[in-house]
Image 1 (cartoon, rainbow, N blue to C red):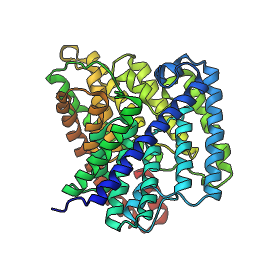
Image 2: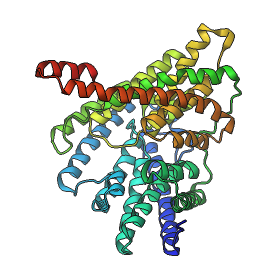
Image 3: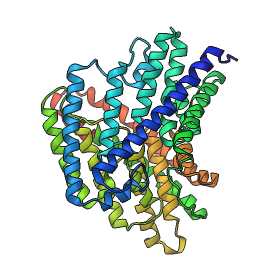
Image 4: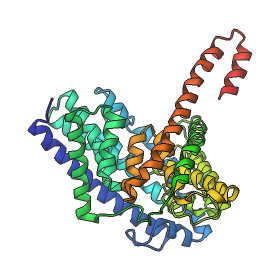
Length: 435
């Protein structure tokens, strides 16, 4: 059993502390920009949902249009004159590809600014990327070997996630499940040490903030059974969501045309926000509504469709950002609307709308981001809900995974058969039918 060397422990502590400070700085930056962009609430005194709801529709439209100008112009410049961006996954998998530190920091800060201005993407990638860039620099300075470098980068990424969401356990599992993809003693201890250090530092600066301080709702067996029932539908929704984003951005980010595309896309997002303000930001505003069963199914369907469209528009504009909270919002709305319809049709065996929304958010997130275990722990840590919620979450995940994997594998032989068709026009038509 390979243990951590004292030097590696020191590196992990340094990276974890740095990730914590990065999380504090980015959080304060985001709240400050939100305050000046939309008014009301300073440094998180008022939730972003209330901020955008209180702001006038015209103000939302103006801010989003300005955000589109920034998205198009800034990322066009980055892709034109800066070293190519390297993702965390790429640098972890390939030691020869290192993240350009200065470019990565600018790129990450830009994500925070645009999310604060209402971009419908997530904020979690930014602290992960800056933390990983810091780990890259540290590895260079101390001439760390390839295997240890991979460990440090993965743990740094998890620590960045832990810092902004206050989720040490879920962040450690995230590093292990999505980046390292192994669960040996050395990896597990490193991930927990780094994420724990990051959260400790953040709590000294911002306090022990619960992201979703919501009341826990009691539920019965009917809710668990319904959770298992909607799993396949969530799986299908995730597949459709993935396919809807696949073509974008259709304009290269180093093409000047992307600037006009970004302005138009974010103007349209601004128009949508005039009627559905909760689509702005990463999706937390929508989650607060679905997790507490505060809205009608009609408004829920409206938020589901407009948030989905807003994410597509932002992606088409060339914007960068995370997909964690947007995925949660989409899954939560699907769960909420489904539960409301069920209760209308079968009032004698009603289910808890809030619980199903919570479960839907976790399962949609787990499938969309390929991290089912992380997603379940992540939702429980965000809310500090009881482990009793594990039962409906696991029931839903089981049926969702079965259908998701079956549909994914079924797509492969179908594509192979199409590629073997001799007639080019027939192959072309069939390929579009499959898509």
